[in-house]
Length: 125
Image (cartoon, rainbow, N blue to C red; front, side, top):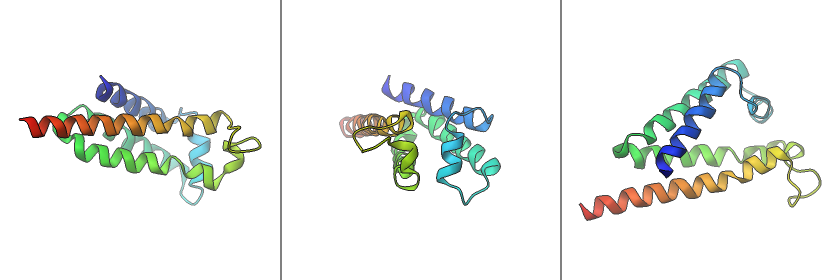
């Protein structure tokens, strides 16, 4: 269930970027300000969707998990690039955007559980 639910989130949020309806679009534009948003945001969405679809194929789990973890690492960039959007006064008082970024720690943990279970299954087969 973790693998499928994570796949749904990636496909859904990626599709929002592809169809230019993502609430995160402004954040992406302000974080990756040196790239043309009309090209980068949809490409990011496609990459997210590919990660999501890849999660649905069990044998791709290790490779897709590496891509997912790289993507998750990048999602923390706004904390450094545009901290005013992420925190009101201190690190202990995040804005809604900051809260969404911090919750990515749960997605990282989920991905690690998925790949750990996948590798365990490989060892027992």
